[in-house]
Image (cartoon, rainbow, N blue to C red; front, side, top):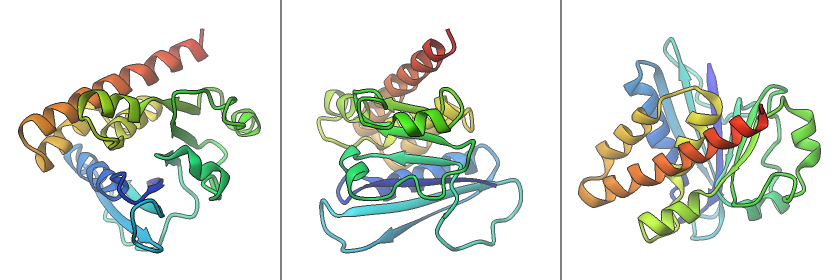
Length: 192
């Protein structure tokens, strides 16, 4: 089973991103599920959502305590929420930021995980350019696809195309493409 925990703030599309992740996994032939966990349901409040893929039916319904991947859609959560709690020793971390993990003070995490497993992606920047709103979900999921190889970029784009139509779907596809390419470049420079 492959388990992903998404952290963000209310209004950033964290729950939608988890749903799109599960849909993309389903489109690739996996069993999948997604569900949110809310505290105070208000814009700006911390939100956690979960997604799982498996090759057989998923019977688990509890929150993901030992994720394979942690996606952080809002870097300000790094100071207030233990977003890396339970992360597996070979896990992956994708952070929505135009800086580096080291600039975010995550040098210890980078050193603890395998090389290239902690990456930042400029998902909000791409969303502002293409969508005009700070909705980084498509970029974060595409970045995760590039980082982990757990799914195809086309599946992320197709999932967003199922939920949104017309220009919104196209804009999300453009955000996904830009984020995917950025993460691929960063992975290649890590291995150079």
